[in-house]
Length: 398
Image (cartoon, rainbow, N blue to C red):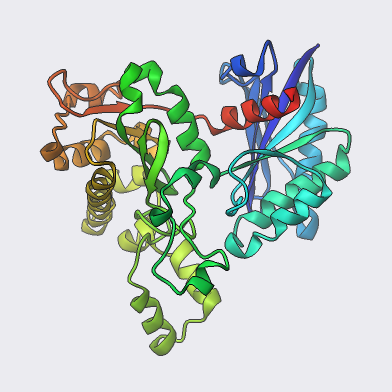
């Protein structure tokens, strides 16, 4: 029987999961999951889907019992029960979790116990839309499978290497001391790219690199020697680029104006900034880049153009923080699949020495810059789940 590590990424209405075989040493953990899947629409119309390592469907069914205040508990129980009968002979020996916030304290994954879970609950005010659901999943599994060790891997940890000046706001020190600082997110995705970049660039992977994680949530990270120097997200995951439904960076005066004259309170502003803005808000049509690229509506084009414009501006900012640029990496759902978006961005950054190979880009090649380009442009799929599984295996080996 093969030992395996289960990874969990629990959100407000979904649970992503993957099962990785633990064969050989933790440093050689296979990147291909035995199976993976998603529980979606939790609490509304919950649906369970799973596929094997070859992409073949293993499960596809509704979960009518996952409703009410215990919906997440029911969904996790169904997941664990299903895995017990469909794990291909694998034996789950540990569970690794994506936990959004590790605050200033955690820059490495940690093995979880009751005290650690309570400590992480202290970061809920820093990530109120994500941290509670991460911790609820951990508590539920501790109840259902108390014998299984659990590990937390933090989305903020990769960015702890930023210089001190890149992590603070120009606010009174008393506020900074409360934890109000620039943390950055998508760190597990950036860690995967940093870890595998030498396969594409060799020794040049340690040079000045910008990674664009573009999806429904979008951010960018400047790396030197494969460590974070600067990133676009800050105190929350709403800062920085235009996203699917999040506005990205905005003049704080707009928020004061809406509070003073628009009747907005904190709850209404949260809904506006996180759920009603971004590509959806500008286009009035959709948060899905595929739909916007196919649309002939001028508002859709404006949304796409704004999305790309903000990325280009941030590339200039991050290149300044790096002191130059040698490679630009696209990852995430949009970064990996939206060739027109990559083309707009690369054309607008030609002044940095990036020469796009349009045929390679249209064919979604791994390298989309020409041989003569001074800046290498790459398309690299990310694999946050594998990073979580590897960290979990490393901690178990200690």
